[in-house]
Length: 142
Image 1 (tube, rainbow, N blue to C red):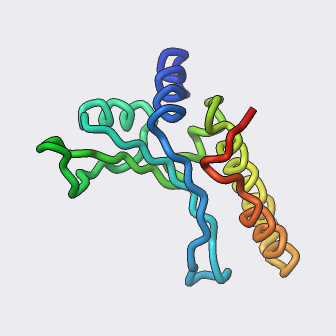
Image 2 (image 1 turned 90 degrees about the horizontal axis):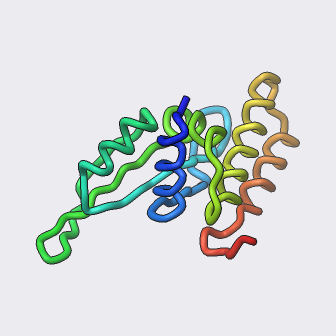
């Protein structure tokens, strides 16, 4: 559970420098594809990203190959269950709130269906509909 200070810090970083991506990925399991939800934050300061990583308790930091004037860019990425799923219910965003809520809807749909082990074509159709109607990251929210 995040403290008030940590919550404010995380919300500000994600809203300003973060990216919430929701993608369809091929799956070798029971479905033909699965939803992949990722939180990414890029910054030139790896110490800053390590602090964020410690606060959210997940993610991997890697140095990107591109250097701007000798300054490297670092990226923290946190995926699904371990990274975003426990974090997203604790925070509220301004700019990226619509995508955060969409990610939560997708997880809720997946969890609801996993209780029912018989994943039907109706389940696949509903999840595809959710995935196909994801708001664009650049879409202005009010």
